[in-house]
Amino acid sequence: MDATAITVALTCSYLLRFGMNANPTVHGASYLSVAIGIGLGWIAMLGAADTYQTKYLGIGTEEYRRISVATFRLWGTTAILSYVLRAEVARGFCLVVLPLGLLLLITGRMLARRRLVAARRAGRARHRVVVVGDRSTVAELVSELRYEPAAGFEIVGACLPRQDDYSADYSPFPVLGALPALRSTVARAMADTVVVASSVAVNIEAAKRIAWDLEGTGVDLVIASSMAGIAGPRVSLRPIAGLPLLHVESPVYTGWRKVAKDIFDRVLAAVALVTLSPLLLLVALTIQVDSTGPAWFRQTRVGKDGREFQILKFRTMYVDAERRRAALEERNEADGPLFKIRDDPRVTRVGRTLRHLSIDELPQLVNVLRGEMSLVGPRPPLPAEVAQYHDSVHRRFKVKPGLTGLWQVNGRSELPWRDGVRLDLYYVENWSIMLDLAIIARTVSAVLRRSGAF
Image (cartoon, rainbow, N blue to C red; front, side, top):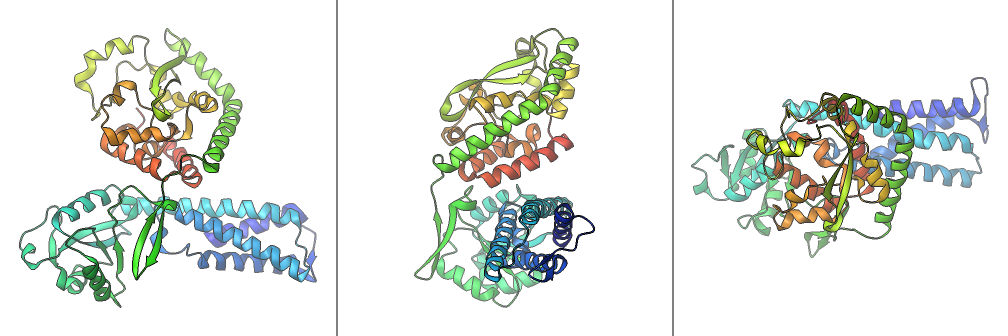
């Protein structure tokens, strides 16, 4: 797929710059040979950046980041070689092939990822994993790993530190053996990955012996940190005195990254509002024809730093919906402080269509333009919901609420309350422009699938 993407980018750039009949040269060499050299160099750079390592495939933004780094390294090298060799590659050619090639590479990887994740959800293309640790930490780690089927970790069993822990089964996964017999246990289970849970029972010396024991087996060793919910650019490895220490940076809520996010949000919101204005007007008129009441719906939500604001949406319910809610409380299908009914009788005929297509959310672009919301962020809650939050959930208000977010691309209304909070807090702790772009891309897919929209 990468080779195809690069070939298409180079071919399109050549045709756009030179046309069909031209035969341009660079320092005596034809552009065909130059393009072949650039293409081979591009593939080599992708390999050097570890973009084909299986540990980066299927989940997270690291795969896309490494593709971007490899691409810019290639064109940095090309620019240096052009200067040293005094071989002037046409600027028009470079200006087209660089962004086009990067776009096609990332699009191809996204399509491949969708296929891989679908296979993993169906039980294929998975890593067979043995988890090491005491019973409580193994239980906690297994519970967390089950929330990420896209990672492809199939837990085949646990390996406990002491022999006397081996007698009883550990539900829902069997106890396969004790730590001293880890190598034979892994071989017997045909596992290709060992995950060591952070626990008192597995100390530094024990972890070292696990690494030695697995040496030469081809089995991947993964150490699970107790710092759950923190990942990405905030975490770096610092080897000190032979110990691989994880250095965790504080989350960034100010500075140039925040300014860049605000500019990105408002510019994109303005462009989207202008582009979609005919559709917004048509939807507003349809709502008013379908049922009595205004086309717009305003509701108080809680935003950044706990400040309340008026969210703007298309009205999808009858005007007396709030008064009818008390009679429907027993039909609530959501857990926690949320209120959701799949076949809510308060939803209008047009409103049901708008919700399925997620069009009812589009007026929130006005909130983004005002600076009250972001394109990507946690779900904006109602004040009544916030009143039921415990302390840790209030960290959602460290950033602006979003028009879309991890909650939307992972199930929306079908997502349990606990999972929604976990995803929102993960975003708050690890947000970045690259993560925002990945979520926006996944939102398009989620809207087309109409997953969890009711």
